[in-house]
Figure 1 (cartoon, rainbow, N blue to C red):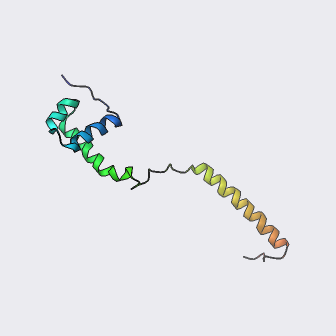
Figure 2 (cartoon, rainbow, N blue to C red):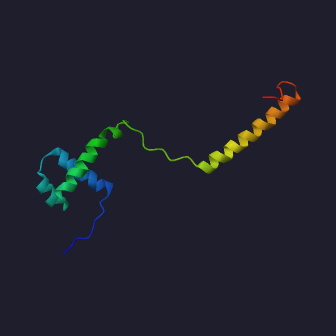
Length: 99
């Protein structure tokens, strides 16, 4: 009989990985205790060790991508303002018309 795929939460994964790092029990014992495959425990342990520095500010969380629509609108507004200012400076004789 094939087992259905289970999705474990981050808290559970962390708990299993920390138990593996402690080394009080073997992978086989942990696998039986938490009902997961030993390979999965090893993977979670490696992920925890690789990202441990992030907890203490080693890396910043990925920033959200900028909203391009908003940025393009802002560029348009600034370009319009620059054109208006350029026209006013030309009228005032502070800027030459040939640039």
